[in-house]
Length: 178
Image: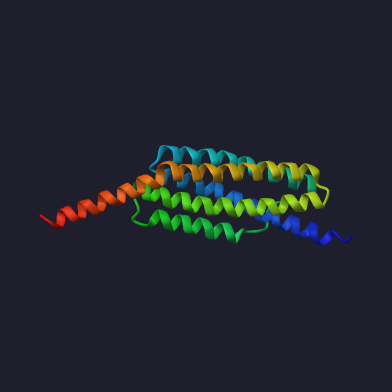
């Protein structure tokens, strides 16, 4: 069959996403705990619940395909999560840490948006209508999460981070003149 190669790639990409989502289920609580902004913490907690739903959708797709979702480790997500962990280990505090967390979370979202867009297209081409609909729904949620993160950064977090930096510079300058 000419589409056998594409179907194999499709299943491989789905396994990669399954691994990515499961890694996120473990990482999001840590990000929520590190956030100083209540809005950001709530956003991470909400996305954790969505991510658990994404895992369930992928499991439905694998069940329909008669395939096992395990067997692959998503190294891309592993790297993105590692970068986010590094940001949490820096000396950032308050809104500056929140800005770093948002940056890490948006890199994750962009990765997921690209991956879900790809597998949704493969599902369409392979005639996997139900899978394509499930993947489209997840793709829409990932886009909404990215938009929410942008709005939070632009509306609250980045301005506070800039103000906190100004406060630190003023405090440092004031202590030098004593």
